[in-house]
Picture 1 (tube, helix red, strand yellow):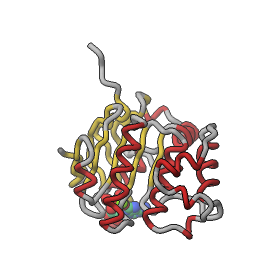
Picture 2: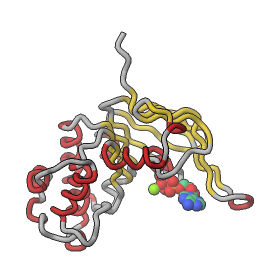
Picture 3: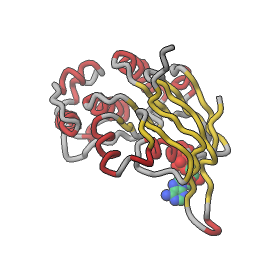
Picture 4: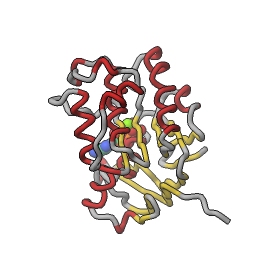
Length: 222
Ligand SMILES: Nc1ncnc2c1ncn2[C@@H]1O[C@H](COP(=O)(O)OP(=O)(O)O)[C@@H](O)[C@H]1O
Ligand SMILES: [Mg+2]
């Protein structure tokens, strides 16, 4: 029997911040699996630990306890350099405001991001596919929220990741812009057969995913 390839396996993950009186237990034995090609939405109130979870999955933070595997590798065996390599080439993180470099125009942001992954890309092709070819020469502070979001997406696609982690990707957009960007987002994801984990407050965005999980009391549930 063919086994489904798992991109993420998390089992009993715990993570806290602070100490003594200010100690907060954010994740309390969280478990889930993400199969290759799947898109999963994570919902939950502000402060429940969604960003913390994403930052464990891209290696910017380490869990206190529990077993975390990415691409079949146990994270205990991954050094900071190993994680950095994964973030350059296999795991893209899309932040709410778009993690663009302010001193580079959009085209150069894309070329730079691809270069980190050892790739050469034609930025205009990517921008055309996302419907924002006209902003190629503009700097991040010359973009609208929706344009910045799509430019950030173009940068993420430029590295040809296998796993896309998105932290409230439509969070800085108004409803109308969010409705325009979302279909593009999913079309582009499906085209690239990307595995994705999308943190969102937006039920319409969550409904576009294969599964929705709720983060509450430090655990993930369907
Ligand atoms: N660096 C930190 N130090 C202390 N507490 C933190 C830190 N980062 C986040 N927290 C707390 O951990 C909880 C979860 O934060 P976060 O993962 O950002 O939640 P979400 O993304 O769901 O809004 C919140 O109560 C937040 O205040
Ligand atoms: Mg957050």
